[in-house]
Image (cartoon, rainbow, N blue to C red; front, side, top):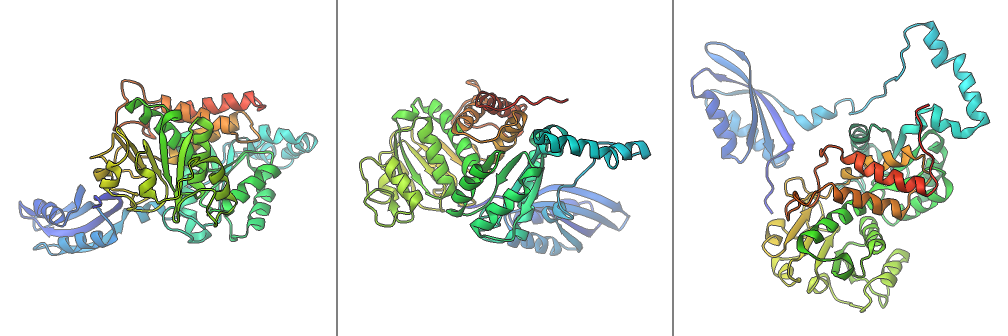
Length: 470
């Protein structure tokens, strides 16, 4: 599957060129000849003989970016001075910062914000610990916790390398839900140590967002923290993905006129995301599901089942199918992949039922080429931003946590997740719904608020406390 130029591999090349009339067009032509895309051309100084120009281009990857620079350098009369990777420039010094919400302009304000006035507030919280949610940053703060063991498509790269991703997550929390989120990168991949570390820092936060922790460790970490803590714990790789998948599937089924309880679903991937998707689908009413991993279909007769796979075997595949993924897909209505690239061909997709739905979510290379899948399926979704119907967790987690914090909830429940999925699906109106638009853009006005309201309503019904400003 050929990739297209992307802003994530964009560069700005500062160069000089002679002042002839065709100079600028020669730069654009050079970039286009090697498959790049010019997104901006800025003349930052001009003279009769020479022009200094910043050329901004989108590339496919780092090697392609270098090829673009070489093509520009080869243009007659060009001198390349500097090449800047725009993505790295955005990350210089980090992407987030802490700012005070209160003025500290004089001694009076300092005395109230800090000593001696702050002692009265601390004493009030000591007498009534629940006041911490009202009188401190706890009321609006989330810890984004990782051990760096399963970062994006990069794998086990460690806590320091995971930090830019956690910063990005924190920035998204602020941008879409006005939540103060803090990246916490732990230098351990020991389950006991992770659980203990999060338990120790929990008093400072209103919620815990576990991120990029590999399976099966992530299951135990989440389960134990939910037992230990009185604030909600949410593993976004599991539950955020599951909520978006369910929302998108609800709308895809609307497109093809089928019901969740009557379709056959074939899944590829039995890790953290796959298991969470499966559990939420079953909770929502799915009945006929077969899950495959690298060894084929998960069924009760397999001899290699760990606790997670055993649960899957007990709750799916009632016919005991024991074949491979291609066989599981044959005659299915829905395929959901959260696994590995290029597992299915167009011919195998063609053997699905009429009006098939394909969610090929492996990133960056999906389980089947989306363009080929579209020749045989009615609806196709991926995890990529360069195709329609991107399944992206950012559609959920800001609003989900906004609802939890506003209700001062102590937990996350399946009914909250169902409510979030329904709210997200409902953002797409009947007039907007189409095979190429089953899920809204993250920039859709009011999206996070819609999800937050749905979660908050369930949380309050299940024992949360209404948030008040005073």
